[in-house]
Length: 439
Image (tube, rainbow, N blue to C red):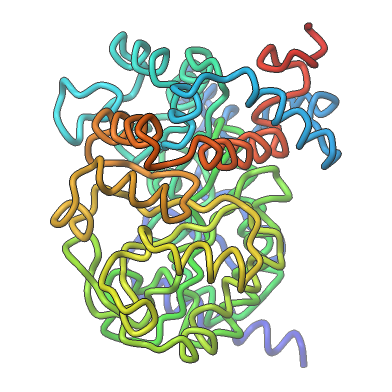
């Protein structure tokens, strides 16, 4: 009976994949061990560089596991030691994850940076950002990507979050480039139709293993939104479905799978935007649900993901005016981040905003206002401000003039450092800490 059920589910997935159009690549089928997605070239048409690229994508680097700190008390102590050695400028830099256009502004808004420039290097030295985010335009081959990441980390005195949106389906910056030689997965909607927790775990684990081999350590996935509105296009097939219990089960397994490979998982987009019709990339969006509706549906997968140990939650820019009495974005609302996420849902990990260059923010706030509002309201990190230097300076000024207490900054940086240590981004022999083996 179990075999017949599995065959039926596989058939559903195949039908869905065919409906998506003719694809050169074969997507991973719902088995417990997803297969590699790409057809490797034969010896006759393989160049040396292509062979190296395949090797990079399939063989994870040797991890210095003996230098990864796992004891909670040691992690806290080590992070505190590093924090005590940091200047205010260094601490503020840790609060930002930026795209490369904000580190080298000479080329415009969407320049195809594929290597570290001299300007980028100077910006990393000056601002010491907490992390960077890659897009498809920044990755050509596995070899180029790995070299790019290695250089970036080499020029950063504090090891960075190297992040990417690798959800699977349509939003897969790496897998949707066939030259990257990683496994391509169906949409989350199709995975939800299969409703296989083992498959969700293996999907998360496979993505984690493959992107870790390239040098990534933070994935902005999985999507925990429950798509209850069929007209919703911003989330669309990125959601596992309209059943909060089903979404919860699959989200939890993806989190566990990703983090089993020591890759940071991110639940997004809190407080849940699967019921909306608007698109926060294009303008303001308000959800008219009351708090009881949110608790019954939208919050459920986030609660499950928190229980599964998710390291990060991304807060969206939609507003929940029936709850907060304001149309201010959730990413700038204390009630959402401090009262609901921290207190009601007991989330102790990192809170990061959605990208701050979206129209729902830039139409109403300057980069400085948006960053200061988000940090003041409870966000630990700000993602992709429209103008990083302006946002950085505004936060610095807010601390200098007492609008933001430096102790608040310290609390956020402590969380950031603890997560970097926990995931082996900062190792025990770091020179950042006076208690390291080298000192």
